Amino acid sequence: MQINEIPLGASIEIEVKCNGRTMTFRSETVNIDNFTVLINPIKVNDKTIGFDDSCKINLLYIFEGKVFIWSDIEMTLIKLNGVIYHKIVVTGEGKPYNRRSSFRMYIGEDMSLYMNTPTGSTAITVLVKDISETGVAFITKEDLGIDRTFRLKLKDHNRIINLSGIIIRKEYLEHLDSFLYGCRFNESNATLGYYIAKKQIDLLKKNTSNYPSTRNLQGRTRHMIRSHSTVRKYKG
Image 1 (tube, rainbow, N blue to C red):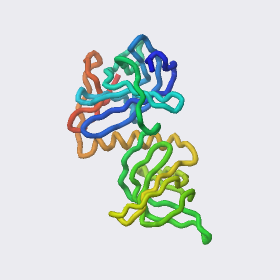
Image 2: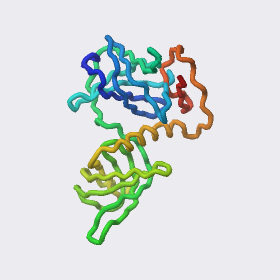
Image 3: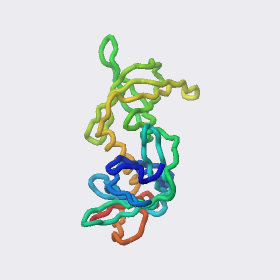
Image 4: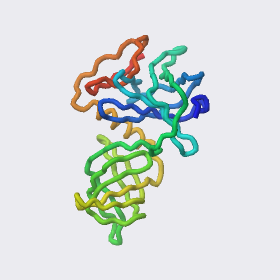
């Protein structure tokens, strides 16, 4: 796929691999000229962020259910007519990419899962393995049926994100004497997308108390995340 086949205003994903972690951020195309793409700036908590040179950055675009990837892109912050953008330079065409259409974020935390029974709602504790905007995987010793519906409450500090879904896959894990369930959410939830993006940044900030100030805009850095798991925020 050629980069100029992506329409203006299209939703794209920026996949960042840094310090052994993979993160995905969403944005929209603003302008495409040959192999140069302008996208709306990637922000977390209303702060524009940039990535360090040690990070590998890929651009992903989903077209007709297929994922296309432009690998090892160059990405810098620019200011044009007083507006901040991320400028992307790609090489070659986008290649088909065998990846789930939604980024799955590793969680590894115990959470409460609620199900309806003949005697009313019941709660069980499950280990949430990973989560995306479209589904969740969890592990429990409970033997649950395929097509079983449930409600999951994600805790984000003092906020609760209520999600409902259905079990679509089931696998017995002999070494854990437990079951791994793959589930699909019944509806989209914008708050969940924000939670996943924020969780990725929180992982990078873990065990870090001080963050360096960002360099001037004219610096030709490829940005966003420093070595040693620090996050740089651009202040325009």
